[in-house]
Length: 297
Image (cartoon, rainbow, N blue to C red):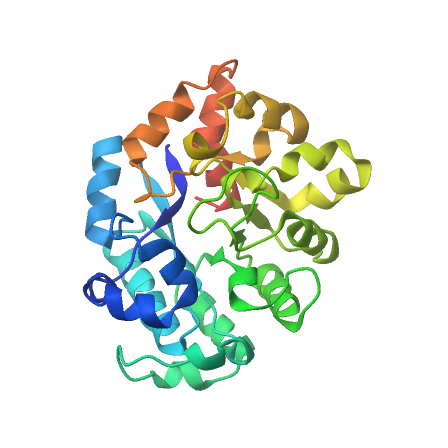
């Protein structure tokens, strides 16, 4: 079983209204103002999965500041989870009104009635509708902190109450700049993991280097329920990172992720399989067995 733990899909309407959304959605603009930044639909993800031989893909939503966009894109993910026969695993977004600022409304469509309830009620509805996780979260982009905030408390509650992992964008504190680097500091992710008993976290992009701090006993203890996906590895790290992170946090904590459509799923899978000094059993765990256990597949 091959599972991609980190992909993105958006409704065709988002791609059609790209320029408008660049003008109104700051986090979206940081990445997608570049016309070369790819936007993929559910059909394109499924075609990519067939080409790469991938059985399941976690499809993440985005850090929208608009309630309407959050709801419309969540609905799209949940619809395609059903239409794909479960091959697409939906990780949805949440709308926190106090963080919407001047960007809390869009003309994409009218807000559905389901969006007007309380945040806790909406989280229950999403879980009941088939949401399997929350993400890709970019707390810093939306003006709240995972370390200490009401939003962090709500996310912790939802993760534990509904067994929904939180997939969090992790930003490297050093290294080169790239579009979309900001979003979630490793300090805040570590603080959240320490404080949020019962919540499972998937720290994207090798957790922004957070596994290297597992050599500190207190950090290692905080990472008990934290996993690390391999998305965008080739843009950030030497291939030896696979061996290093396995040795630091354990093979069971590493999940293959491509960050499709940023990169090809087939190429990302090939790069992972080419990682040096990784055994066959370890590779099987990374490419699917760990995610299957985490997501109860």
